Length: 158
Ligand code: COD
Image 1 (cartoon, rainbow, N blue to C red):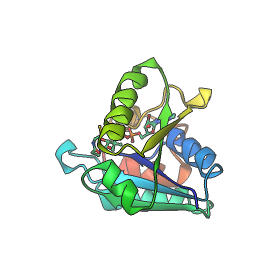
Image 2 (cartoon, helix red, strand yellow):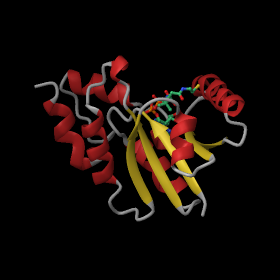
Image 3 (cartoon, protein in one colour):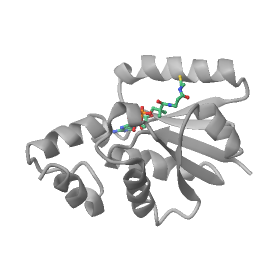
């Protein structure tokens, strides 16, 4: 069984993330979306809220599971029975960080490989931080996040 892990902060999940989830889930038997419990980063949404939103927006994808994780990504992937990490690439600015992360992960866990999917062009500009910034100033975020979570994001800034 081919299992991949797609890790991230997802604070909040965007249409760019969802596109990567939909595309990569077609390449594997099971895709586990791993939501980092990054309390040190002071996220907008708690890890439970982020997991709930991701579960809602992936309900149509039968081979996708969503789980929170703490600690090292490679340990989480091992627990999931996976040797494959999925990441998205938007621009050259993502590349350096992603390369460093993928190489570090291979040093600490040589059987772990990272598969990169390039962004759909229409989401190339999109990030969770842009969504938070727009929402903070009352901007329309419906082109950025799944419809079901628009209100939840805006509510955080009421
Ligand atoms: N289009 C395509 N892909 C996108 C888009 C978009 N519009 N937006 C984001 N993505 C991709 C990102 O490039 C990334 O691959 C993924 O979606 C998730 O993005 P984020 O921003 O939610 O997640 P990150 O980058 O904050 O996640 C970082 C991790 C949680 C993976 C990392 O910190 C981690 O593994 N932490 C655990 C500790 C660990 O093991 N550290 C050692 C690794 S060196």
